[in-house]
Structures are given as C-alpha cells and as structure tokens.
Image 1 (tube, helix red, strand yellow):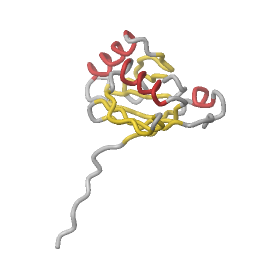
Image 2: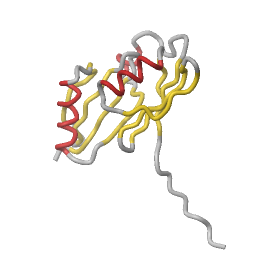
Image 3: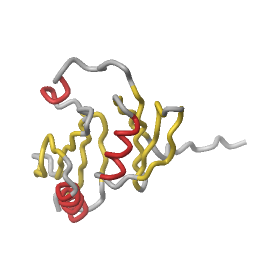
Image 4: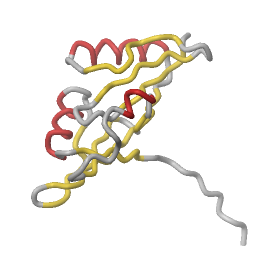
Length: 133
C-alpha cells in the first residue's frame, strides 16, 4: 500500500479576547469576516472567516499579556496574506474607510512585501501582507 501524501489545507490563528460577541462584531462589521460559529451560552469561543482565512476567538477573563507588550514588541497574533499588490492596497483602503484602527499603516517592507497591521479591540495585532508589485 502506498502511503497517503498529507497536505495541510488551512490554519486558524487563535486570538484571546475579553468579549467574544464584541470581537465577532468587530471582525464581521469592520473587517468583513463572516461568523462561522459561536459556542457557549453566553458564547466563549467563536470562529470567523473570510475566504480561506480563519480566526478562532477565545474569551479569557484576565489579560494574557503584560499591559502594552504586544504593541511595544510588535507581537503579531495572526498573519493573513493576499495574492496581489492591488488586493493589499484595496484591503487597506476598505479597512481604513470602515474605521479600523491601525498599529501600522500600509508600507513597503525592505524584503518587498506590502504590509499593514490592524489593532483589534483587545489589542491583538493582525498583519495583512501582499506583494509590492
């Protein structure tokens, strides 16, 4: 019998949040994700998705990180990519127009990528990246 070749097909970053409902509202209302599911009554875990990008939202009752360390150290909670330069620019404009807060606005990195970082209501840093050309 030939061994089966295994292909990993998706990944979901897990973000720690203070209020799952409020986080879902942000990701759906501001960033254009869809609610895949919410679990618990009241919800303490949910997943949102947009195309092939998935984010798991896990409610915590105390801060997981020392105050301000994520922003000071640029500690990313998730990285999401698009395939073209026009997509990364359009996504940045869409999020700007929707009122998203940015930790870093759109810029070209020394290694050739174009990136920006969204700051969610809980201080999670979500990187969006695409090619510069």
